[in-house]
Length: 259
Image (cartoon, rainbow, N blue to C red):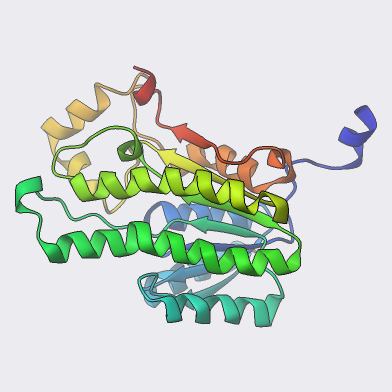
């Protein structure tokens, strides 16, 4: 056992090809920096190419390796084109951070068909088909790591977020099923469920004093999360250290769900 530990760094992912969807802004941008700093070549995929290019420019300026690619996760042809471009250039996808997501707040009785379809198309359908296409690539090259992104809303109901919460609950169930079916291909599938982090999606909550106090009053650690708080769990699930971990969700929420 000691010799096994000495012969390799269980957390080393340097040289890996990491695909991160929705990496132009928010937590996706943060994940891109985390994996670039860990020595990965990061593919920053986003529907907003200007934002993705900005993430890439920042990574390269800090000495990392990154490339921006367009993807509309609601369109299967776009997903296929993204994966084909990566495979043609790099020959593999080692890590997928299936991060792209949207929210459109509204009362349940007022949710429109357009709102429902928009959220479901990105948060559930997009996650499903990005993972499916990447899994096919990973099966060709001997395996990989898929990390889907859940939420507090995967576990609890949040007012005015009925569609968002239902999709994020679905992401956890999808991750379990994927883990079972892809195990024999040496693909580990797990999920990370962040609590409250300041992103463009949550900024209105942070800026509202009453809502912010409500949120912070329910976090045992007493503060909102930062990208640094997510770095450890993400790198663990992407590294050889988690080769016997699949089908699980790691909650990174400051203790919210424990309270």
